[in-house]
Amino acid sequence: MDTLDRRRFLTACVAATAASVAGCSRPKADAGDPYTEWMPASDGGAVSAYVDFTLSADESDINPILPLVVPGNDDSSDLAPTVNLDGLRDPLLTFPLRTGGRLLGAGALSLAVVGLGDLVDPARPTTGVTEIVFVDGVTVGLGDFDTADVDERLRTGPERTRFEGVGERGEFTRYESVEGDGVAAVSDTALIVSTDRERFRAVLATWQGTQENAAAADDTFATLLNETDTGHVAVGWEGPVDLDGYTFGDVERAPAGGLVSTADDVVGSVTFEPTAGEMAADLAFRDVDGVDQTQLDARLGTRSTERTLSVDGDHVVVSGRYTAETVDIDFVAEETPKSTTVPKTVDPPPKVAAAVPDNTFEFTYDERERAVRVEFTKTVSADKVTVTAVESGFTNSTTAPEGLAYLSVQVDPSGDVVLVSVTVDGVSGVVARYDVP
Image 1 (spheres, rainbow, N blue to C red):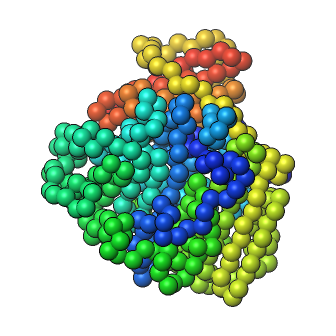
Image 2 (image 1 turned 30 degrees about the vertical axis):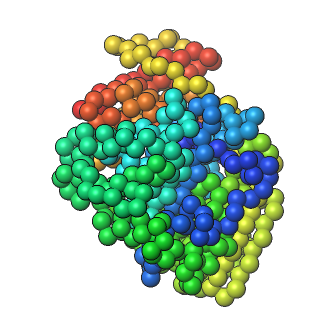
Image 3 (image 1 turned 90 degrees about the horizontal axis):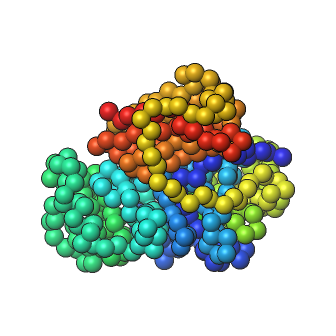
């Protein structure tokens, strides 16, 4: 059995819809699906990703250091799976979660850059971003928005990210940045941001019905979209594509373990079913280099309880269902966020100090991404390690620090403090801090 150890990748609180919690699939992509109704038809080179943030009524948190995991929205709405993709070798799952996560990370960060990153707010769980669609560098946040509040945020941000209104287009108010190429559009139910004005106009036109939808086009990519469930996390592209500039972190040179390439047409998704402790995955692609069915049989869906694989020439469609018996995935209760006190000095309890060797953590601030990476340079024998950015409110944690390379958090670039706390046998303490320059 592949082991997904207890490393927490909970970087966005997302809930399964009632249909999926009941064990039903999400609908196939079509012209009315949020993943595709914003996606323009293209002649190739299109990159897209989607996540359903249908938020818990109790609490929500969004951290754009993806990949994503999803809790339920019924009586177990505080449940979230803990997964470690580093321990999983099944491309049917890792493609949508790892590759999709990196694309969605870039999309979520684009909202943060223009001052809209905190619209998923624990105090307002029903009025924030509930879905994100990322298409070719254009980020669409879907939800329920106070347009006056968004207008003020866009107009009063730092000068380099400040916007001004330039007119109306249908239900949207359009904005352009005072400096640079930034563009935005805002309605009661959608936010659109980008630095590519041509692609921005194409996405907006697709939503408004004046440009053809990708799923409605008569091409291979449309076929793939309609052969896969949209799921809660999805990713796809119409090759050939260049992923540089579209991902958070390093670009994958061999997506899906090398079974697909950036020259192929591909769509993959994952649907979570928390109450059942299960998840389902779909992958459809056209392999421009030819299909090796022996490799597909040996590597795709190898840990699934049910798998279907169809190969027709260069066209591949595969689906799999995963349970706790085949993949070690836990749905665990999330802790209620607590206010953070910034210690003046780092002086952890003796039990905590003994678990952390000197100079264990190294901090790297990425100013462009507005994130701090905390690298684990030595082994930490502890029950939990948590990284918290005090001002931005973002956290990231792991319950399996042994062998972990790093954790990252988004920070407030105007001034923030990053704290690393460690828990051992129920005793917690701050072991390191970093002041964002």
